[in-house]
Length: 460
Figure 1 (cartoon, rainbow, N blue to C red):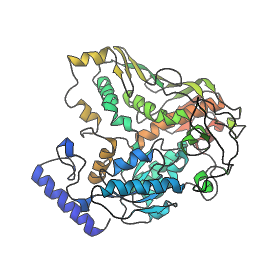
Figure 2: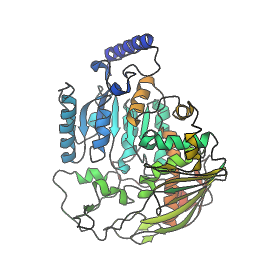
Figure 3: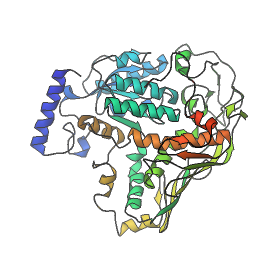
Figure 4: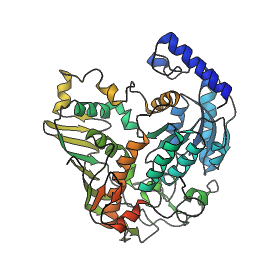
């Protein structure tokens, strides 16, 4: 941002704080009904959106509540063009009729000095490279989960974050939203109402095998080579859905989640949410497991030395169960089968939390004995809980760490990566959470990183 813009923003911030005596950022009104409005349109942060597929349809409009989008980018021009039209429509209704640039190359956004913030809503295997380059370009970052494809990528992001001092929020919205059920569950735990936690069970679902997916012509709007990024060159595949399973099967777009080349399956897709909350609840959000044991796993294609032997079908685990033991002796299971959510077991009772429910005797007791008035605020790093994107923009203004910070996310997603390594190699792992190394297994340790295609390497 320009010096003139920064000076004006600082002046308005100081004036508003002095007038209102408020600790919240100057651009938010105290009235919740008008919390999405800035005091002065000229001082809204400027945003560039990298990755504008289906998930962006939620992330992008949320970002436009607090900032002005001036550029969108996607390697599929159909996605980018739709995002352009959506931005023009939403911002136009607010009186902002400025043109919005459309790019295929994300570096065009990073090179724009007017852009303060980038949202990264790409496939998982692109997150780290773009995030690192964005921070080095002086941008604050909102990146969807899971942040990384490998454990090593997390280490690289942390290194860059420390070097640049940027504000970085990961899109694990359960820390802020979903009726604040997860925050209230954590409040129950932090006040000791479950006693000492002894076991946790995270049920995150499995996937249905795809069957063979034929090679297909690449859509004219898609730059397939660039979409592949660090992953090996391979054929584009697609087949139509049917009445029983209407979603099309492909290697691309939403279905990237079910290919180890680009993601980690449900283990990282939903594990990024539930394992994150679970480790926070047991006080291990800055640590990790010491042992990871694969109890069972079913892969839809055969594996050899942990690698898929076929390239025409989904290859991540369709069903699985893994048990992790933490330094405080708490045991946590991550499994596909069962009711989606997290079950905490303590010496005083049990509690289940999901996006739709918060149940258990300690929860029922809240009716007569509610949580202390400041418990949730303390969990939320001293801020009033709100929507996840608002927390990010507040922290950008205050230059503070958001509720879903890189450090704790790296610890949670590392557990998920270790679980995937264990089920792919079909053996138990011993992990040192301090040195972040697998103990006594050189082959497994090599899985902390992977070879990246030339020209698409991640360099912190």
